[in-house]
Length: 178
Image (cartoon, rainbow, N blue to C red; front, side):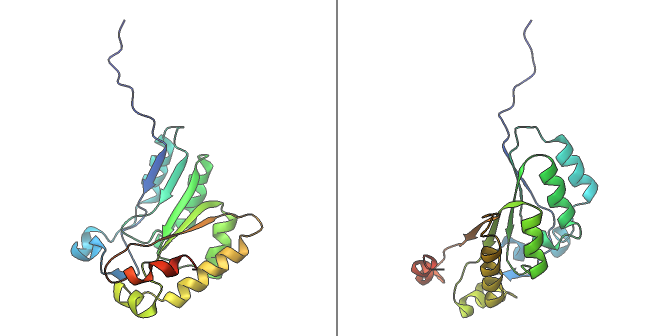
């Protein structure tokens, strides 16, 4: 007897966009060209729970990121805790503007495995131009504090996303000493 059921490739990585809301207006982001009402909502927690309940056991990473700033979701902490309960490693990509003392402690205690900050500039003027509404000093302070507080466990692993453009190309060498 031959089965007509197809075997799906192993799904190991799941990226979820918790919200379309964002606290920045980045020049290179496609959000700026989309109608605000098409991207401004939060994913209902019930839908998020349904997604997590249906993911295969092969998923080892749940990454929270997207066009919006994931940490702005009203139930962001609950989302990280629920994702962790699936047994998957939780990864987060953020613009870094919400890296407050409390948020840093939660990232550590909630076992976020990888926290990546999208930066795109190391110079205040360039950052203000590319990521309108950002505060580079505040973001850098948050990254430094996170790295200092997580040293005993090295969790979360901290990374930087840096989209290279003609406007920030001159900063590439400085990334090595960031």
